[in-house]
Length: 608
Image (cartoon, rainbow, N blue to C red):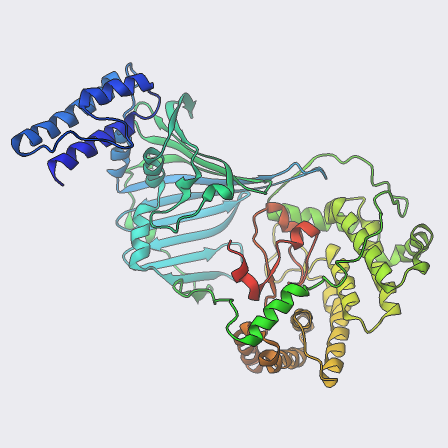
């Protein structure tokens, strides 16, 4: 670096340090003293050369430091923020606590959902990192990044049997390790347009903090440019330092994704800087009964973009005729004022806060268990619906539309977490079954029956603490739902004999049927349906799933189990979505959740 550039950089650094909590008049005086201008568009009257240049550089550094300590921050609470960064960068070890809190609500239905994760983290520039993560007080994972062995180990403490995911650590990952830690938060905030947020007390310590409101802070160096403010709002990154040690004691980043009701706050605290860490801390032992799964992070997810005319046609057809969309164009009857089975849906609900996925799922199972069984109220419900909605005058489409309206009302009233919503989902199932009686060859009506059953019936039940071994499965899936999907499989076979081409909806139904046959331990049926899907792949264009189907066939032939291909995925941005889990992949849920679901072979249409 030439003397001119050295002088310029020192002035820029001094200017950057001074940019928080200082009046514009003071900054102007400081710049004039050093011969500079504003940070943007600095002009220089001439190049400095030789001994004069060296003298000017030394003088600039001396004056900048002196002014930063005395003129810019007078008094006993002086802070030179660049010195804070130099101090933390001088340590090669640190321990801290990390907490992540996500909240959504309270919603109109009275529910507020939240999760709290906490981890204890240990970092060593020589050995790597080790962390233990707890979710709502329960140990969930242990994670190691081992620099000398170039290994990453992930132990799941919440799974039975024990599992360890092991993957190599690349040179690039090691470089990222040395730059992605709490020190980087300090550096990024101080590199941006931060402001001082004054003094406070944290854990009995006098502290001073800074805040950055620019969400581009989240962008990594070299990351593809994008307008991050287009999808992140109400963003803030802050840290506070102990005024005595001038070391960070608390950092936090808080934001809300645009269009979401979820706030995520990540907090780092309980720092110990430069604490000795023994190498033995970073030497994990893999238990003998732990299954090790090798994972290669360099393997990229398959490209879902169509590559052949058949794949393109399949993608277009999927978009034009989405699963469960056969009746989307039908007008829905008004059922908002409808009262059924003597239940008053207008009764106000007390506010309920559910902390974490497990609490949400436990609340769902407990609530549904208090409802009267469907078979017990079916006859009374049918009589009421006949009189109040004139079911006998409705054709098949009219019945299905009524069922969809009742199912939407069920979700509006709180779904499986509501004491008063069950008559509406029972009604949705009932009228779909009546529609099936009138049009038994229509697979789309059976889809509606399955969707209504899955709206309140889950795949397995949750217990706390979780019992060892297998979860308790809902027999309705291996029974009634398997029968409904089996009936659709028969209709598909009849269509193939007539020369019809299977559709995306047929693929979804078959994948469900494989999973349900797996529940029945019917390996022969699983193999039969898998081979049918493989045989139709080239003709239909669903070749994106072919490799997975082939692996499934190999497992079934080897006597292992195969649960079918994943057909839908969705971004889990909202903790409240935990109530929609534990169903078949085809489950769509309420309208707002359904809009987030995407067929696996169309993932290229949305970036998450």
